[in-house]
View 1 (cartoon, rainbow, N blue to C red):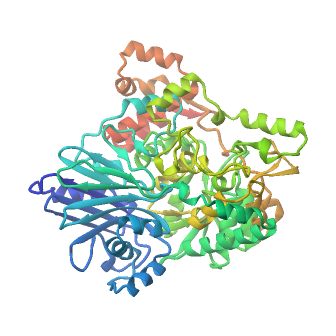
View 2: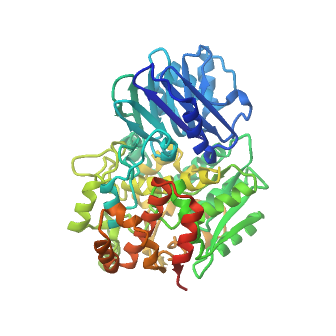
Length: 619
C-alpha cells in the first residue's frame, strides 16, 4: 500500500519546493495510483501516493493531519488489527473522522507514544510522523522489514522515501563502490543500513529514527526478533501432545489469513504450486468462494503449473496463469532494476513482476503470499543448525548423511575471500541488523537446546524475499500480504519444539530431504485442506536456470558504462571481461543495467533494446 516521501530542512526558513515535492510524489505513483497528496511549508515537505484498500473515501487521503493540525502522518502499509486498537482508543475518548487504519495509527502514536504504540501494531508499516509544534520527525519500520524505507541525512536536510528514485529531485545519486564490489563477489545486496547508493541508507527493520531540526538523526531499536523468545511458552509447547500443536497452528494460521483478507476491495492470492502458498489459498477459499488465484508459469521441465491447477480443481477455483519464457529474463531486466532500485540478481523477481502485472490487469490490488513459512518452520534443506541433537537416536549413517548434505550447501560455509567481501556489507548475511538480536558470537538468543531454531533465516534471507515481493508487487500497484508473518504465529514458531519442524521420515527420500520431513507441522495442517500428494510435495528449486544459460556478447559493454563504473581503463576492463566467468558476466550485466537506469536515468526502453540485441538464453 502506497509510497511515502518527506524532507526536513534544518533551517525552517528553507521551505521545500512544492514542485520538487510533487516530482517525488510522481516518482512514487506506481506504488499508489489512486491519489497523490503533498504538503510543503515551514521547512517540511511531505508526499504520499495512495493505493486505496481501506476507507476509499478522500477523507483518508494523506498526508493526514489530526484534528488539532499539530501532528501529521505519511504511511505505507496495513494494520490488520486496527479495529481493536481503534476501540481501545475510543474508550480513552479519542474521536475518529475516518474508518481508515491510517488514522488509527496516527492517533495511537499521539495518545500512546511511539515506543508504546509500535509493539501493538499487527501488520506491516513504514511511516513518517511529524510534530509541527516541536518541529520533529519520527520514522519507523516494521520488525520484519516488509515495507522499505530509505533515508539521507546531511547537514542541510533529512530525506526519507519508499524508493530511492523519489530522492532523485533532491540528490545526485552516486553508487557505493564497496557494495558494488560485494555484489560482484556474490552478495545479493543490502536490506538494512548501507544501500547501493552513497549517502543513502535503509532504516533497519524494527528501528525508530528521530529527527529534530538542526541535528543529525538518531537511530534506536524498538522491535526485535528476541521479543518472540518466551522460555515459559517453549516449556509449555514442549510438554503438549504434537497433535494439539498441529490444531493450534491451524487455528492461528486461519486467523492470520482471515485478518489479512480484510479490505474494502477484493483480495486475491498467489499460488506457486508449493505447499505454503497452497495452504494459504485453501484457507482463504473458505472465506471467499470466488477467490481470484494467480500463478507465474515458468515454462520448462520444472514448471509447477500442474500442481497449482491440481489444487485449484480440488478447491473448485479458477487459476489464471502468465507464461514466463526464457526471453522474459532478458526483456524485463530494465524494469526489474528500476523498481527494485538495486541490481537484482534474484531471478524470481522476473516471474513475480509478471504475475503481479496479471493481478493488476484483473483489477486486484492485494494478494496473499506464502513467504515466511520456510523461515519460521524450516522448509530449506540446509537450515538445520544441529541435526545431531535434533535427530538423536537415528542410525549414525543417516545422521552423517544429513549433516553432510547441510555442510555441502554454500550458505553454511565461508572462505577467506567471502569473509573479506562481507566486511564491506557489514556481515549482514551473518549478523543482520540489531533487530535480530545480535550477540557477541553472532548468534541470536533464540534457544536452540530444544532442537531446530527459527532464528537466522528470519533475518537476511527473509528480508531479501520481502524486499523483492514489495518492489515487484508495487511495480504493478499490487500489495503483497504475508499471513505466515502474523506476529502471534511467528512467536509460536520460534518457541515450537524442533521435532514439530523437522522430523525423521523414511518416506522423505527426495534429493533435498534425505530421511527427514521439513515443515512437518505445516504439512500436517496442509493435509487437512488438500490432497496428500500436494501437502507432502517437496520444496523444489526455482524452476529455471535462465541466468546460468545467458550468453552475453562483449558488445553490450562496449559503450564503457561498466568500465566507467568500476574505474577501469579500456584495456583493463577488456582483461576483466575476458577473464570473468559466465556467472560474473551476468552480475556485470545487471550492474550495468542498474547504472544506466537508476544512476544515469537512461530510458528503460533503450536499455531493454540493447539487452535484447546482445543477450540470449541458450536452450
